[in-house]
Length: 253
Image 1 (cartoon, rainbow, N blue to C red):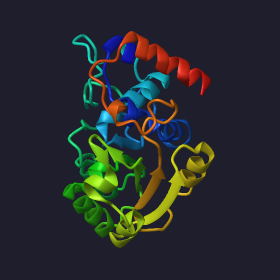
Image 2: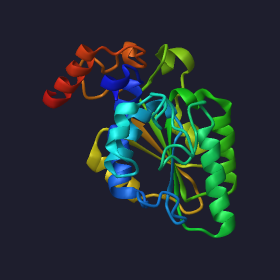
Image 3: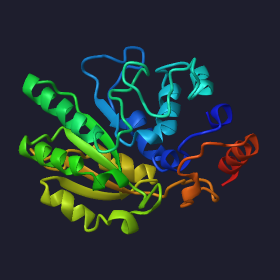
C-alpha cells in the first residue's frame, strides 16, 4: 500500500497489528464472504487513521481481493485514507473523526441488547482520542446500560501526531478513570500475542459491566527507525526507497 500510494499513517498502523491479528484470527465471529451476516460480531476501528493494518488483515481474510491494496488512496480503489462504511467490505462504520467510533459502538451494543441479539462489539481506540469528551460520554452510557458484550481496546502507545500523550493531555491515572466510569479493566502488552489471546478470551471480566483493555504498545512497532518516531505518524510522501527499507527491516528485525 505504501509503495503504491506513497502515503499513510505508518506508526498508527504498526502499533495495532498484533491486536487486529488476534481479533480476526481468534476472537471475532464473521463471514468474509457474507460481511453483513446478522450474527457477526461488530468491530470498529475508531482510530481510523490506523487503517493500513485493518485493510491488510481484511484482505488476508478474504473480505476483498488483495489487489485492492495496490489501489490504496487511488481514485479507482475502495480503500481510502480512513475506513468508509458501505464502500469497504468488513468495515462497520466510517471513522477517522476521532472520538466518535466509540459512541457508534455503544449504539451498536445497545441496539443488540434491546433486540435480544447475542453478537458482541469490539472497538479499538487511540490514546490520543481519549482526550475527547465524547469518549467519556460514551463510557458513561455503556456503563449505565450494563453493556457487558462491549469491549473497548485502547492502543496506549503514548504518542500522538504532535507530541507525547503526557505533554498534550495526560491521561493518567488511565486505568482508574475507566474503572471510575464503570468498566472492568485489564492492562496488557499489546504486542504479546499470547497475552492478548488469553485476555480477550476472558471477556467480559464482570457480568453486567463493559470491558476496557489497555494495551501498552509502541508507535511504529517492528522497525527500528519508525518506533517512537513521530515523523512516521503520517507520511504524505513515502519514497520507493523508504518503502523498500521498511520491508527489508520487517524481514530482519
